Amino acid sequence: MFKPARHGEVGGVSLQRSQQQKPLRSHDRFNLCAEMSHKIVNLRVRDVRFPTSLEQHGSDAMHTDPDYSAAYVVLDTDSGLKGFGLTFTLGKGTEIVLCAVKALAGLVIGKSLQEIVSNFRGFYRLLTSDGQMRWLGPEKGVIHLATAAVLNAVWDLWARAEGKYHAMYLSIQDPKQIVSCIDFRYITDVLTEEEALDILVKAQEGKKQREDQMLKEGYPAYTTSCAWLGYSDQQLKQLCSDALKSGWTRFKVKVGADLEDDIRRCRLIRKMIGPSSTLMIDANQRWDVAEAISWVSRLAEVKPLWIEEPTSPDDILGHAAISKALAPLGIGVATGEQCHNRVMFKQFLQASALQFVQIDSCRLGSVNENLAVLLMAYKFQVPVCPHAGGVGLCELVQHLILFDYICVSADLRNRMCEYVDHLHEHFTSPVVIQDAHYMPPKDPGYSCEMLEESGLYFKHFTFVQYKHWRGKNILKLSHKRTGLKMSKEKVFQKAWGTEINFLQSSFSVTVNRIFFFLLIKVPSFSESFDFFLILFGLSFIM
Image (cartoon, rainbow, N blue to C red; front, top):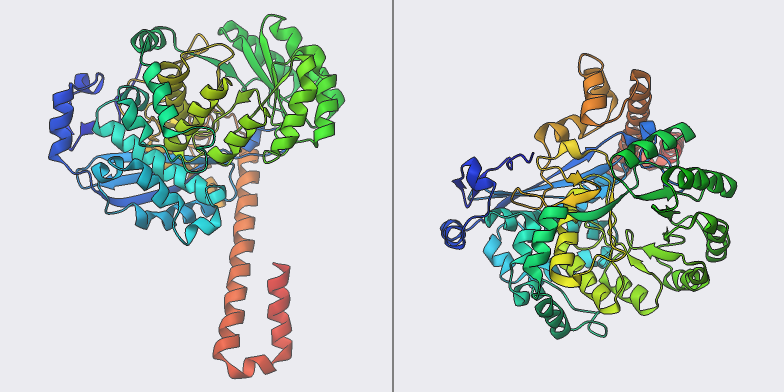
């Protein structure tokens, strides 16, 4: 059962529940949106973190203790309508993304929704090509993660203003409108604006039938939730057994820490799921090129469909070499969750360096840049199997896969989308899985509005919060709201470590500030050599 969006209004006009559950007629949408400018008057960003590392959820060969987190953006407008967006992180460093989002705020506040979407390509370039901030990228790293969070909120705002869920609204747009959202700079040697338009126009045939198919059957999914690297054999067996009973036939296993252990675990899982189920393996960038080829060759006996992220995500030629070496074994290469931008995807495709494109709703520059990659993947006839999981990635990416099938590829062969069964209960419109398929959402927007209480409880996972949780809320919060069964001892250990790190960092900053203040303001300070050594030593140690 879908819940109506928290902000049940379009253009500042409240809607009844029945209206929220079905698209508005075109003239209603026009009248409501014309009444309000939806001028963005404020941008708020929140640091939201979940202690998933306590039970090894999300663990892999490179990320052994991830705390699934997000930089969560809210756009406030003069009409009262809000847009929600986020970008995904693994805990530490989320505060850096927040700083980057705040740096972009001045480019967003004051603009109306109509002003943005009437020249969406120009707005995308405004955010990614600021004369000073682009030096922090360009179009990669923390500044690009921040850009994705802001743009995701804009797309959410646009879909809410039109009273439709994002994929539906995007699919009914004129192909020219869709193309106008894409920045083709640096990719015209592979995909021109005219070619993109031609692809979208040709896909109009049969679009209604594909849309009906998705509403009835949903989009194929695979699960990663059964085989995180930190799970015990007993957990693997139990989770695989439960997944099979729920209709799952596609499974991904984390590998890369120890070869013999990988062989044993993969054999165990293959035995559990049977020969007819699909198995994928994921190394999360663990190996050098030669090591990847050797390691995966040893795992060929379990017949994996692909090896995901076998080496550095930046090594395009390395991926090409691995792809060529593993092709005789029938094993493809999948990558993309840490592919910075459309230019890198262009080169991966040109070099035949991947056989499965894994777009990410927050690594690339939101929908705008993902549209470019979907179209390039279609041109090269490489299936798209998006990265998901994390915090809100499943909620976001469901819209992209629906659009890809309905309006671009029209093909489900070798196509599936990742699903991770964590943290969906924190969203007002959580993703719905039915018979191992993503079912289309029903609420307006881009599906990434979080429950207010979730952001409040987990904004900072510190010792102070532990003291609050220690009472009647501790068990309820640790299980119901995170889906994790955490002991008080583990929560305390995690919170205490976080508090110690915070105190160390704060003390270091304070010492440095005192040192430089005295150096500038007190003339005799530079002559006080002993005091100088003390402060400098403390600063260096911390």
